[in-house]
Length: 192
Image: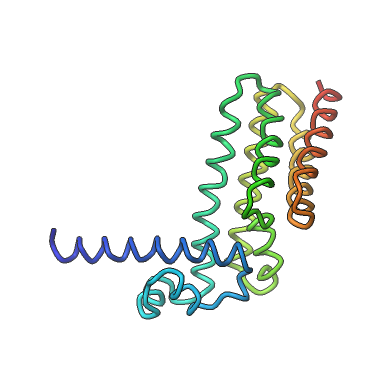
């Protein structure tokens, strides 16, 4: 392996280590309470390398949200794709939310939390949050269209899911997903 390839590989590994640490710390403790020195300690990546990879903490937050978005949406899609019936696929979204809310490390929605902490001061974070929420809403629109239901239903389902995320983040229970699932079922039946 030549020196450029080895350097690139080392940088890629350090980036993943930094992002793993950032995800655990930012999601678990909040972004503003975590400094770059905390990331260094948890990741084993030197401060010099951290700042080489992410010249500002805001860039690390942006990369954390971007990577988490890909993983979150993939986990959701994998769960929903197990269902064949189009209406069951809609219900599967809320079933997945219930499972997510039951995870021991669940701390609410990372994007809502990030927006609450930095949305007023960080255009980069705001852009990541809006992109994630837009993608989630578009996903729901696709499920509603596949079920042959009126398109405005997707907006209602989106609000149910988002409300469940906020409430579950506060209460640390799965009840918000169960209640949202019941409301979603009623909405689908009414629009059928």
